[in-house]
Image (cartoon, rainbow, N blue to C red; front, side, top):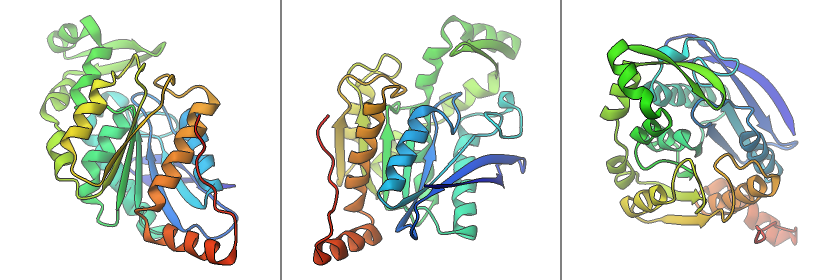
Length: 274
């Protein structure tokens, strides 16, 4: 696997830090990965899934949303809508410099973001979510009793995952104004919903709501005993292997590659059960 450290302008023009992971040979498809809320592109699930996809011939761009990780900007000034715009900017960058993404992958709130952004990226034919909420407003559950203080004071520092983040009232307002289930219904792309039935951060009922809102082609894969962040290597690798096999059905260039391998007698990997 080859990794390039890249930058591109986000929704405000400030530079976003990115990694492009590519296979030894020319990739037969480009994927764009959106990380979870307050996470970064380098969280284990993102890096492991990216590596597994690269092993299967994909190129994967993962980046830090504005104000997170190594990206410029202030997190306090961002919201769900700005994340969606950052994703569209990432797709624009890929299109201009390499090739447009045909596969979108989103983890947690990143899953909601790719569902919202898909209609703005014409080349996308497949979308996959991992532990995604049925609506962005679900994130408010992580803020608990701080919500009223944020509304009263306009801004408040809260602890999320053991780290301090400044949350503004505009962030809450944007969550309440943002809906995705109608967008899921109108998606017009193949959808894969992956979720753990024991996810303690985003409950499994969110997966049901997303799946019911979607039209065919749609698929659901249970991640069994995985935690929300897929901290176990086997969970991340299983998700990646299933995702790669599923995507090949909806990405013509990947299917063509597999057909050539089959005709040549080459081995084509398929996911194994966990």
